[in-house]
Amino acid sequence: MRRETALAVGAAGVVLIAVVAAVLAPGALADPTEERPVRPGPVDITEMEISAGEVTGDTVALNVETRLSHRGPPARNVTVRVQAVDAESGLVETTRTATVGDLTEEREVAVPTTLTVEREGGYRIRAVVYRDGQRVDSGARELRGLDALQPPYARSAVQFAEADALPPVAFSVVGGDPDRTVLALQMALTNTGDEQPEDLRVTVTLRQADSNIVANRTSVPVGSIRPGRTETVETRLSVPTDYNYYIDVVLWKDGVVIDSARGAANLDPSETISVNETRRDVELRVSDFTRGDGAEGDRPVPEETGMPTAGGGPGFGVGVALVALVAAALLARRKSQ
Image (cartoon, rainbow, N blue to C red):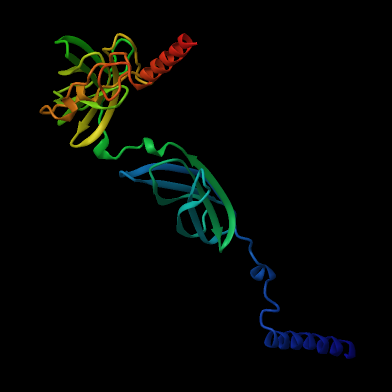
């Protein structure tokens, strides 16, 4: 009985100690797996998709979709920061932060953001993922040539033709007189789209090659050009003879420049110019390009005779007379000796 009593007393003591421990230290006997800290699952960037949104004359909206992949245990308080960094200067142009929240399932999630930047140059689009304020992943993509994006008001499928056998600007001489030459100008336009735009016009400007003075200009309405077709717009202009000219043509739609081209008209037989260069300078007579009422610019210039004059009158001048007097004095002195 003593042994059984000792065992009973011992068991009672163990129970008493367990009860006291449970009261004084709650959770001491709990399952340790329930209190073990759980490491959050990884969150990675799998892809960045960038598309152009609204385009204006100065800016473009970039729609950036960052795709995140989550695996394992839940990830709390996930955010994505997206920046546009200038490719040349390295300066941050704009920043947007998107809140994702908690990721509890193993899946991919798309996070959209919009960055508005200047419509010029290039940018590096950078995305950084944070989990509970801690940076866990990052990615970047580069964009170039944003200036090629056109706002809706400047878009048109009609443009000047570009082919070796069909230059955008051509001309021919159709008449004139010794002072002025009449040029017949042809501008080839191609509709590369699927629509038939209206309200198009072409302005033609003839500039003297050496001075850039406008010799003549006009505006020509463009008729209907069917999709996929090429049409020619024609007009005639007169310019002073014996000069070379640049032919600048501009295509307009509702007051907006759509396209432009340049040609060259060589009317001076002593020189030749191309669209991009001039071979030599020639003398310019501004009066040929003015249309006045006989003012100062129209007065005739006296021709040079090639003989020296004094005071604008004929003769040998003072210098020659002095030389003659000295020669005569020396001759008289020699005879007297």
